[in-house]
Amino acid sequence: MPEYKLIYFNARGRAELARWIFAYGGIPYTDERIEKADWPDKKKSIPGGKLPVLMVDDKPLPQSLAIARYLAKQAGLVPTDDLEAAYCDALADTLSDVTGEGYKIMFSSQSEEEKKKIYREEFFPNVMAPVLERLNKRLQDREWFIDDKITWADLMISLVFGEVRKRKAELLDAYPAVITLVQKVRDNAAIKQHQETAPDTPF
Image (cartoon, rainbow, N blue to C red):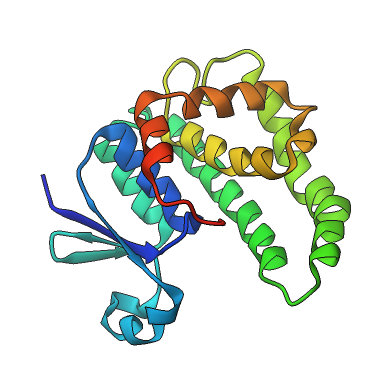
Protein backbone atom coordinates (compact mmCIF):
# COMPACT_ATOMS: atom_id res chain seq x y z
CA MET A 1 0.00 0.00 0.00
CA PRO A 2 1.31 3.49 -0.80
CA GLU A 3 2.13 6.01 1.91
CA TYR A 4 -0.53 8.71 2.03
CA LYS A 5 -0.30 12.27 3.27
CA LEU A 6 -3.33 14.55 3.06
CA ILE A 7 -2.44 18.24 3.12
CA TYR A 8 -5.11 20.82 3.93
CA PHE A 9 -5.88 23.69 6.24
CA ASN A 10 -6.78 23.06 9.88
CA ALA A 11 -10.45 22.71 8.96
CA ARG A 12 -12.94 20.12 7.76
CA GLY A 13 -13.83 21.93 4.54
CA ARG A 14 -12.97 20.23 1.27
CA ALA A 15 -10.69 17.62 2.85
CA GLU A 16 -13.12 16.07 5.32
CA LEU A 17 -14.65 13.65 2.83
CA ALA A 18 -11.20 12.19 2.19
CA ARG A 19 -10.64 11.89 5.95
CA TRP A 20 -13.94 10.03 6.34
CA ILE A 21 -12.99 7.63 3.54
CA PHE A 22 -9.60 7.01 5.15
CA ALA A 23 -11.39 6.31 8.44
CA TYR A 24 -14.03 4.03 6.95
CA GLY A 25 -11.46 2.04 4.99
CA GLY A 26 -9.04 1.79 7.91
CA ILE A 27 -6.36 3.24 5.65
CA PRO A 28 -3.39 4.79 7.50
CA TYR A 29 -2.36 8.30 6.47
CA THR A 30 -0.71 11.48 7.69
CA ASP A 31 -3.16 14.32 8.23
CA GLU A 32 -1.06 17.44 7.67
CA ARG A 33 -2.97 20.57 8.69
CA ILE A 34 -1.69 24.00 7.76
CA GLU A 35 -2.66 27.05 9.80
CA LYS A 36 -3.88 30.02 7.77
CA ALA A 37 -1.07 32.20 9.10
CA ASP A 38 1.51 29.74 7.75
CA TRP A 39 -0.10 29.34 4.32
CA PRO A 40 1.75 32.14 2.44
CA ASP A 41 5.11 30.51 3.24
CA LYS A 42 3.87 26.94 2.75
CA LYS A 43 2.10 27.67 -0.54
CA LYS A 44 5.35 27.68 -2.51
CA SER A 45 6.07 24.09 -1.52
CA ILE A 46 2.58 22.77 -2.36
CA PRO A 47 2.24 21.24 -5.86
CA GLY A 48 -0.12 23.51 -7.77
CA GLY A 49 -0.34 25.96 -4.88
CA LYS A 50 -3.86 24.87 -3.89
CA LEU A 51 -5.34 22.65 -1.19
CA PRO A 52 -6.25 19.91 -0.60
CA VAL A 53 -3.47 17.78 -2.04
CA LEU A 54 -3.01 14.07 -1.45
CA MET A 55 0.55 12.81 -1.63
CA VAL A 56 0.58 9.21 -2.85
CA ASP A 57 4.13 8.26 -1.96
CA ASP A 58 5.88 11.17 -3.68
CA LYS A 59 3.20 11.85 -6.29
CA PRO A 60 0.75 14.75 -5.71
CA LEU A 61 -2.96 14.34 -6.45
CA PRO A 62 -4.92 17.63 -6.37
CA GLN A 63 -8.66 18.44 -6.32
CA SER A 64 -10.93 17.26 -3.52
CA LEU A 65 -13.27 15.10 -5.61
CA ALA A 66 -10.43 13.45 -7.54
CA ILE A 67 -8.85 12.62 -4.18
CA ALA A 68 -12.13 11.25 -2.81
CA ARG A 69 -12.81 9.13 -5.91
CA TYR A 70 -9.33 7.64 -5.79
CA LEU A 71 -9.52 6.86 -2.09
CA ALA A 72 -13.06 5.48 -2.39
CA LYS A 73 -11.73 2.86 -4.81
CA GLN A 74 -9.01 1.90 -2.34
CA ALA A 75 -11.62 1.62 0.45
CA GLY A 76 -14.11 -0.45 -1.55
CA LEU A 77 -16.65 2.37 -1.64
CA VAL A 78 -17.09 2.54 -5.42
CA PRO A 79 -19.73 0.29 -7.06
CA THR A 80 -18.40 -2.35 -9.44
CA ASP A 81 -21.17 -1.51 -11.91
CA ASP A 82 -20.00 1.36 -14.13
CA LEU A 83 -23.39 3.08 -14.29
CA GLU A 84 -23.85 2.92 -10.52
CA ALA A 85 -20.34 4.33 -10.11
CA ALA A 86 -21.30 7.16 -12.47
CA TYR A 87 -24.40 7.88 -10.36
CA CYS A 88 -22.12 8.31 -7.35
CA ASP A 89 -19.90 10.65 -9.37
CA ALA A 90 -22.91 12.68 -10.48
CA LEU A 91 -24.18 13.07 -6.93
CA ALA A 92 -20.72 14.05 -5.68
CA ASP A 93 -20.45 16.70 -8.39
CA THR A 94 -23.91 18.02 -7.49
CA LEU A 95 -23.13 18.22 -3.78
CA SER A 96 -19.80 19.87 -4.53
CA ASP A 97 -21.65 22.54 -6.51
CA VAL A 98 -24.09 23.03 -3.63
CA THR A 99 -21.36 23.38 -1.01
CA GLY A 100 -19.43 25.71 -3.30
CA GLU A 101 -22.41 28.06 -3.40
CA GLY A 102 -22.66 27.80 0.39
CA TYR A 103 -18.99 28.71 0.79
CA LYS A 104 -19.54 31.85 -1.30
CA ILE A 105 -22.11 33.02 1.23
CA MET A 106 -20.02 31.95 4.24
CA PHE A 107 -16.91 33.81 3.11
CA SER A 108 -18.62 36.89 1.67
CA SER A 109 -18.04 40.33 3.17
CA GLN A 110 -21.66 40.70 4.23
CA SER A 111 -22.77 40.84 7.86
CA GLU A 112 -23.71 37.64 9.68
CA GLU A 113 -27.37 38.70 9.66
CA GLU A 114 -27.29 39.27 5.89
CA LYS A 115 -25.63 35.89 5.37
CA LYS A 116 -28.32 34.13 7.44
CA LYS A 117 -31.06 35.88 5.48
CA ILE A 118 -29.54 34.92 2.11
CA TYR A 119 -29.06 31.33 3.30
CA ARG A 120 -32.65 30.88 4.44
CA GLU A 121 -34.45 32.93 1.80
CA GLU A 122 -32.36 32.25 -1.31
CA PHE A 123 -29.72 29.53 -0.97
CA PHE A 124 -31.70 26.87 0.91
CA PRO A 125 -34.99 27.00 -1.05
CA ASN A 126 -33.40 27.51 -4.47
CA VAL A 127 -30.16 25.50 -4.29
CA MET A 128 -30.25 22.97 -1.47
CA ALA A 129 -33.94 22.05 -1.13
CA PRO A 130 -34.34 20.72 -4.70
CA VAL A 131 -31.41 18.35 -4.14
CA LEU A 132 -32.81 17.26 -0.78
CA GLU A 133 -36.22 16.57 -2.31
CA ARG A 134 -34.76 14.29 -4.98
CA LEU A 135 -32.54 12.51 -2.48
CA ASN A 136 -35.34 12.03 0.03
CA LYS A 137 -37.55 10.49 -2.64
CA ARG A 138 -34.77 8.13 -3.75
CA LEU A 139 -33.91 7.05 -0.21
CA GLN A 140 -37.48 6.25 0.79
CA ASP A 141 -37.32 2.79 -0.79
CA ARG A 142 -33.64 1.86 -0.45
CA GLU A 143 -31.14 1.53 2.38
CA TRP A 144 -28.32 3.44 0.68
CA PHE A 145 -27.97 5.76 -2.30
CA ILE A 146 -27.05 2.72 -4.41
CA ASP A 147 -29.55 0.17 -3.11
CA ASP A 148 -28.11 -2.15 -0.42
CA LYS A 149 -24.40 -1.24 -0.37
CA ILE A 150 -22.78 1.80 1.19
CA THR A 151 -20.69 3.92 -1.19
CA TRP A 152 -18.70 7.11 -0.95
CA ALA A 153 -21.84 8.94 -2.12
CA ASP A 154 -23.47 8.06 1.21
CA LEU A 155 -20.50 9.44 3.11
CA MET A 156 -20.75 12.69 1.18
CA ILE A 157 -24.51 12.95 1.77
CA SER A 158 -23.94 12.50 5.50
CA LEU A 159 -21.06 14.95 5.57
CA VAL A 160 -22.83 17.75 3.68
CA PHE A 161 -26.27 17.50 5.24
CA GLY A 162 -24.91 16.60 8.67
CA GLU A 163 -23.27 20.03 8.69
CA VAL A 164 -26.64 21.59 7.90
CA ARG A 165 -28.27 19.54 10.63
CA LYS A 166 -25.73 20.71 13.22
CA ARG A 167 -26.39 24.37 12.46
CA LYS A 168 -29.99 24.54 11.24
CA ALA A 169 -31.61 21.20 12.09
CA GLU A 170 -35.15 22.36 11.40
CA LEU A 171 -34.36 22.86 7.72
CA LEU A 172 -34.07 19.08 7.30
CA ASP A 173 -37.34 18.21 9.05
CA ALA A 174 -39.13 17.68 5.73
CA TYR A 175 -36.55 15.11 4.58
CA PRO A 176 -36.70 12.19 7.07
CA ALA A 177 -35.10 9.63 4.73
CA VAL A 178 -32.08 11.89 4.31
CA ILE A 179 -31.85 12.39 8.08
CA THR A 180 -31.89 8.61 8.58
CA LEU A 181 -28.99 8.11 6.17
CA VAL A 182 -27.03 11.03 7.65
CA GLN A 183 -27.24 9.46 11.09
CA LYS A 184 -26.60 5.91 9.90
CA VAL A 185 -23.28 6.91 8.33
CA ARG A 186 -22.27 8.95 11.37
CA ASP A 187 -23.05 5.99 13.62
CA ASN A 188 -20.52 3.82 11.77
CA ALA A 189 -17.85 2.94 14.35
CA ALA A 190 -14.89 4.15 12.27
CA ILE A 191 -16.58 7.41 11.22
CA LYS A 192 -17.72 8.00 14.79
CA GLN A 193 -14.22 7.52 16.15
CA HIS A 194 -12.84 9.96 13.59
CA GLN A 195 -15.41 12.59 14.57
CA GLU A 196 -14.61 12.14 18.25
CA THR A 197 -10.83 12.38 17.84
CA ALA A 198 -10.45 14.93 15.02
CA PRO A 199 -9.54 18.53 15.91
CA ASP A 200 -12.58 20.68 16.70
CA THR A 201 -12.72 23.36 14.00
CA PRO A 202 -15.46 25.89 13.09
CA PHE A 203 -16.01 24.46 9.61
